Structure formats: structure tokens, C-alpha cells
Image 1: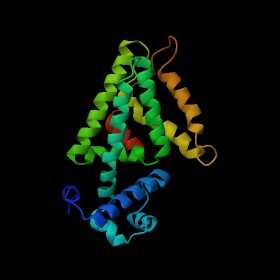
Image 2: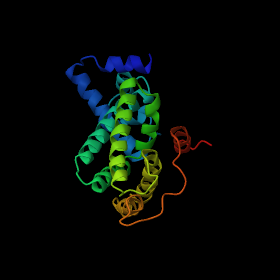
Image 3: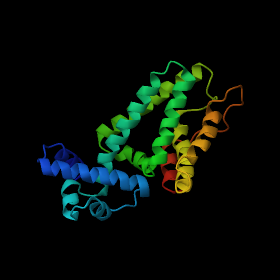
Image 4: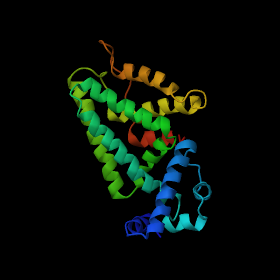
Length: 219
């Protein structure tokens, strides 16, 4: 069965108990992936959820199908965050709100970056949501650029690496101080949204293919 077939199957009405099991599996997977990353197996998720492995496989043919189901909720949340930020009248504050929101998503969710990288190979509805997010955020950045409040050369393509940087701090310091990442996120924000006149950013952001290779540890 293909991932597309699985997606169609998941759209069919479920019995009440099946629907509860599916939601339980999704909630458990969301928590496990967020805490430990995408190395978690379906067997691990079944154990954590307190259901049989067969129950998990009846709803999701493999881990990729489960990740894809979770991707939809991640992009929904990020698009909602972008929409809220866009309502801010101050261009600098709008971009600041969105950036801090994304950093917080990543600080809570170890699997966020890997999951988003997978979006390019997901079903069309998820690719659409990813592209919608890019358009929303690009508009927020453009407003900040026109207003002269963001460092020259900054673009949407810079976000994956900045988010990875803040995420690395969050992963390293979580056991000692779950909010330590905020200190360093502020340093990043001040670099992107300086209070005064500064030199443009050095170099250019990586393109999407290079970002995907970098996040997967590939040359």
C-alpha cells in the first residue's frame, strides 16, 4: 500500500474506538518524536501508547505515513503563527513574533526540522501548506525589508539554519534549563533585526537542496 493509499484510508470515517486509537497514536508519536527525534520506531510508539503493534500498523503502514500525518498538524500550526504575526502593524515586531514562534516550536520539538525537510516528498496537500507558509513568511520579511528594519540580504531561506542553531542549544541545555534557548534566540533576533544601522549579512543563504543535505548530514 502506498502512502497515498494510506492517506485516502485515513480520510474514511472511523469507528469511535478506531478514531480514539488513531488519535492516541498520533499524540504519542508527536510526543515521542518531539522528545527523542525521528529515530523512534512504530514499536516504540505502540509501547508508549499502550496499544498493540498491529493497531499502529492498521492505521499507518510505516513510519513515513505516520510522520506525514503529523506534518499536516505542524504546518497548520506554523501557518497559524505566521497569520497571527502578519496582523501586527509594526513590520519589525511582526517578523520578531514569527521568528520567536518558530524557535519555540523547534525548542519543544526535536523532530521539527527533519519532518519539514520531508515535506517536499509528501502528498500534494502538505506541499501546498509548506508553500503557503513560505509565501506568508516571505511577505512578513518583505514588509520588514521595505521598512528598513531587517538586515539586508535576509530571506526565508535563512530560517532553517537559524532554527537549527537555536534547536541545538535547546537540545543541549534542556535538562539543565528548558528555557536557556531563549537567551541565545534573542542574540539571533538582534542579529536579524538590529536596532541601528549595520553591515549586510555575509554571503548568501543555502538553497533548499543544500539545506536538505545539511540537515541529513550529507555532503
